[in-house]
Image (cartoon, rainbow, N blue to C red; front, top):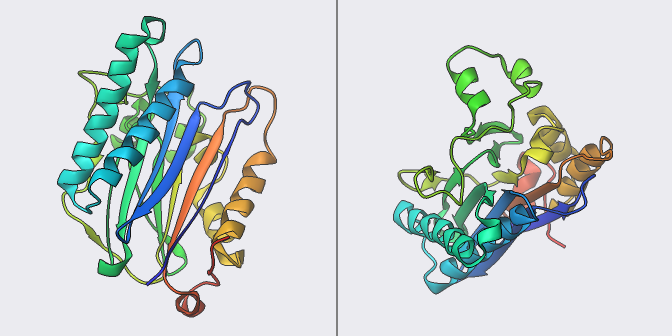
Length: 259
């Protein structure tokens, strides 16, 4: 069974791109990762890249789809950023979100984890199935019934996080307890808030239905985001993952291919 991956990362209306993303395959297992940095003096740019590189390097030393492996990988990414803070005191305030997906197509299983407000979405049968819950003040207000989703999108504290990479005591990632059973035709999207704040879940789904291949899905999403880019607009990045052979998607949605 095939697993196909596409990605983009754009600077948006900023001077520097503080997002970073990547993916790698070894022994039939795929690791996808995305991070959104924050911090003065380009510290966010450093933090996100250090975190992404740490995840990819760590995964390659022993590919495994398990909660224990993913927890170790994410913890090591946090330690890597903390070490860089010690080496570069001027970047002591650098932080980053992190979302990681480990995917085993042969065993139809995946595990994922995140910290901060970069998200993972799963679409099944062409429809929205689930997403991660942000580690943010606004998300906690939504969960408690204090805000609606529409109010949350406009809230002035939308970017206030209570957990992130680059903190010793506030590194509190959420990781699945056990691998998640997948269905042929499942599609994942990892994205920074520059994407999900600009495109709603039904927008991702519309792009999914109209796409002829995995790159086309992300091109459609990118076009929707870029239409609203102005001076000062956030960086925006995404990784799309499809599970199945070309013919398998014909029974659900027209998905196939990787450039």
